[in-house]
Image 1: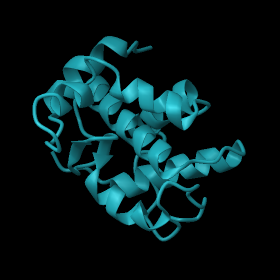
Image 2 (image 1 turned 180 degrees about the vertical axis):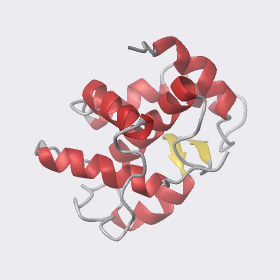
Image 3 (image 1 turned 90 degrees about the horizontal axis):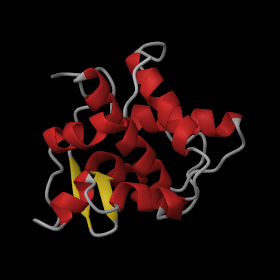
Length: 154
């Protein structure tokens, strides 16, 4: 299914929210927040937040296009205006915005290490794929099955 957002657009939105609260995001933490928002959106609404490949790398889940854009930063703090030229989030008041807000509320205050533990713990989609085939794509169906149990719709 085609979406109107990219992983970079979602990342831009997280950076905007982080700036409002005076939080700083590293490349890895930003990747993990975008990854979680995408999978929670998939599980809750049965539609992707963006249409980009997510793979299981040795250090956790990686959204390949986002990784390629951010790799010049390494794992330093991502400047708030890094994605300034990207479009704004489509559906910010709808399900995309709600997924991002839910992930930020639950995990925005986590350290990079704490968030890494959340996305790589045993039985997560990353863990399942990494232990079957390194550097393979994480299937949406696996994420939907795993994350639908953590959703409470209001």
